[in-house]
Length: 491
Image (cartoon, rainbow, N blue to C red; front, side, top):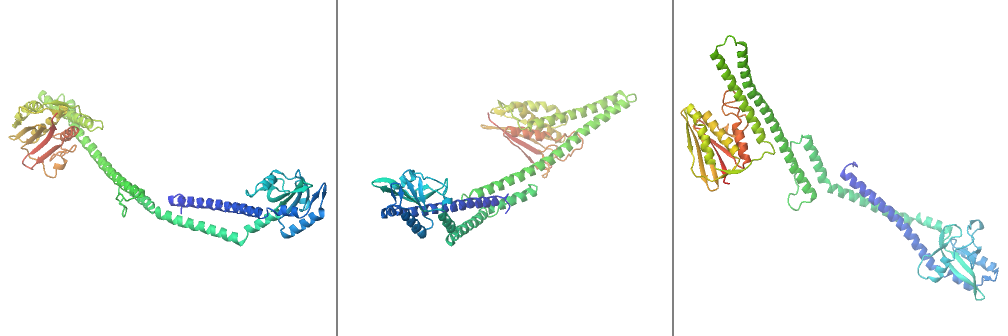
């Protein structure tokens, strides 16, 4: 039972509590027993001094009836050795006594307790000065002594002298006291044992939960807790709720660790992809520039213009890649926000289509715009929505072979506008569809260094629409083109 465990601390606390309780109980029992014995003794012997004074005279003037006192001393000491007899004058001075002379340490006894004893018949025990001690007090019996109608002194009888103390000590060592103490100790030990078993039973689930949490930690926080036989309804107590909270917490921690692992893997892939996509145009750009530098004297003007044009193309591609990376990083920031304003998406779409007419004609494609003349205002940041439409149309033109068709369709309703960009290109393989919106993913065109792009356009479009509380979907049949759709809510 380690003291550092909750169970060990509870048992130690219980042991300390009952030990203190036992000591307090024994102390109180001894105190009340003594008090009760003194009360009983004083009550039973209250009139002993008065009866002795009535039987015979003890003082007349300054003379003391020593034979009578000697007879009283002898008789009382023979009956009860704990009784001590003292003859006092009217001021409390001790005139005579039955105790050995070398044992008496006082010369007088205070009269206030004697006055209280004589005036109070019920408030026992009343303690007076013990002549054998400078500070001690004992129960007593007292009676006034009268001589010719006036009080001459007091008969002061101590009912529990030093012999009485030895009797009390003997009582404490008696069989009855030992039996009572033994029963008390046994009852305390039994209570402690029952309490320890109760604490063991009450803390069993906490110990099991601690063991499960230890296993969860040793497993690297990857295997969430599965608490069996725990109450999961409203009848469960605080420990049940604590266990279920730990179970839910472990599941979340495990899921977060898995997500962090996936994010770390994605980060490494992204760094590798960025390195590849940056290295390819940089290498080409450097190669053309080195060629121009080394063969400047041997190249013709036409060859120089050709190499410069190729270098500029790779430079532009590198510039676009860096711009796309910066844009995506800005959009994926935790504090990214959009400035919504109402605008007409049909007018925006018409302008974008006109912008791509030349590119479509150069590739011998049909660019068809099915745009209604009337459409509701939509809410969004016009620049970002323009970027989405540009990316979708640019991708469609890029992947559609000559003679194909790219179509932009807007469907307007009262509560918004649905935008669809479709092409007649090669389509997307079914196993590639779940990944088309991932960064640097190029369906059928893994990082080959061509002008197919870096695979960031669709990731940027998806993030922009997420910031507009919208979603982009893709439908495609391999070999029969692809279609991308999203919806903008009315302003």
